[in-house]
Length: 107
Image 1 (cartoon, one colour):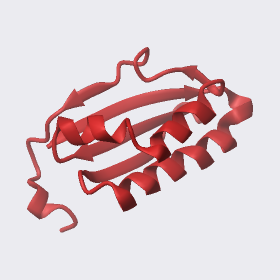
Image 2 (cartoon, rainbow, N blue to C red):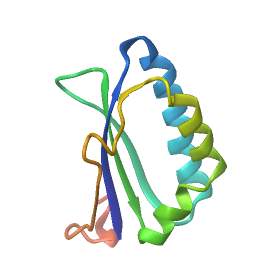
Image 3 (cartoon, helix red, strand yellow):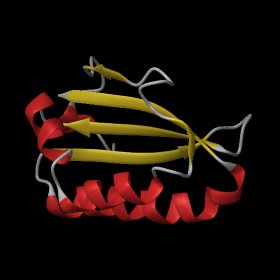
Image 4 (cartoon, rainbow, N blue to C red):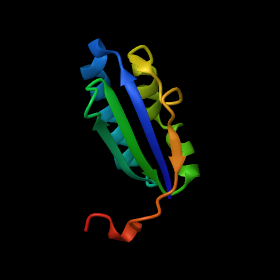
């Protein structure tokens, strides 16, 4: 499995619109991408204008395919001016899950 953990700092005046677009991308990923196993959108406990993405894909190729989907491209283009700090500036990382195994999720 391939995991993305990405912090995104949002400009305060665009927070609500950003979250609306982010949820469209997250839901689109879960609905139409068989390689996307999980897509969590998390609000930072210390900074309400910081969103963390936790995405799980079957492999890195599935994540790369995600970057070409219409819902991702729509999100990327819509939020471009609403972001104060992009994930690559905020140290987005790709990783692998050690535990729990996929078959134990939801137990």
